[in-house]
Each structure stands twice: as C-alpha cells, then as structure tokens.
Image (tube, helix red, strand yellow):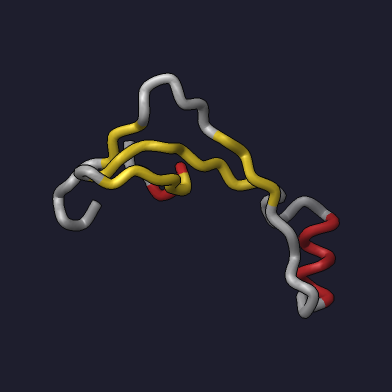
Length: 64
C-alpha cells in the first residue's frame, strides 16, 4: 500500500470470487463486450488485515 503498511492475508481464509453485473444503463458496446466475454464476469477478493483493520480487498489490487 502507498503508506508502507502491507496487506496480510488471514490464515486459512480462501479467496472468494464475486459475480459482476452490468449496470442497467450499460451501452450497447458494453453489452456486446459482456456477451463476448471481453469484460470480466467475476472479481476475486482476499480477506486479511492492514495494520489492525480487517476486511476484503480485490486480489488484483495486491502486488506480489
């Protein structure tokens, strides 16, 4: 993270895939991209802590 505090995954907690949905006001091109699998249908989250605060974070936002 930008302030130098690292994300620590919680032991024994699996990553979770959450389904994504198109908004009602999605454009025709967004709907076509969704149908053709050009947009992701799932997002993976990890549970853990930063400092003393626990919560979920999008795994894609974690640097290895």
